[in-house]
Image (tube, rainbow, N blue to C red; front, side):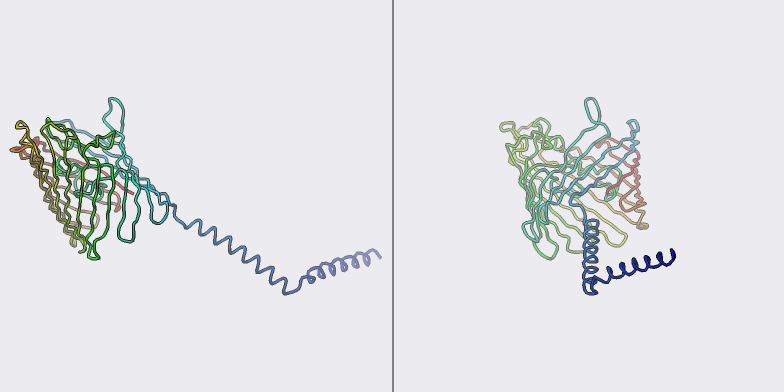
Length: 369
């Protein structure tokens, strides 16, 4: 009797469950399942979109460690530069870029290093071919002043032409217009910026960099550059920078100055060649330092890629910051790239007496990302 009651109860419950399921029509069930699938698809799409959309804030940087063994001086090892890039895209046409540097590993009172802000500017696209930027930025002159990450140039140390004549790394505050003049690879840069403030007693160009640190801005500088990159592996460029008073002070006998720089870069197959010339013409009234009115130099470099990862180079640089004192330096060396953004370098250096007679060798490791 008990078994019959149990069986009847089970059948009743089963029929009740089946009837509740079939209370939802086939059409309603299809609509419900479609709604659930659509909701699931929306969730997956949102999560996938969120994961694949790149951040508008970018981080990068570069660094280089040097070992220098030069006659007449103690051998030195130095983490010369550690740099961080931070950039942000506000939208498709407005962006921010900055470059923050620690030199010589440690900065502070009595230390060798320095903490510097080399770039911090806002750039805005005016249209598809022209853009404007305002803030603190690297000057549009020379070869390595704007692009000086270690993997992109030969030699452990930066060459003396761009150190002592241009003078890299050189940044100012102001505004720039840049763009393409044609579809044939001709571009331009026009900048109105703060200028140098050299000491009127020695007219040392490199020491005249104010680095936008409470910089005197009595006399601004106007700089223009034209560049041609219309042929693969070829860059031709020329820059003129004009400043009405290079000391930022009147009545000291040192007045206006004009910097002219031209260069040609050719990379074809495994071969590379660079020719560069830069010169300052300075209006100097004081007889004692009139031998500083023309400061110029040139660079010739050839390179050969033995393999895509191994390159050889030879370079000759001549320069003068004082009339009658012609300095020369030669380097031959090798670069090895275990990765395209990582480089190991070595070079042998020779100088003439005027340049300090600094013969020896340099080793380096560098990276950028």
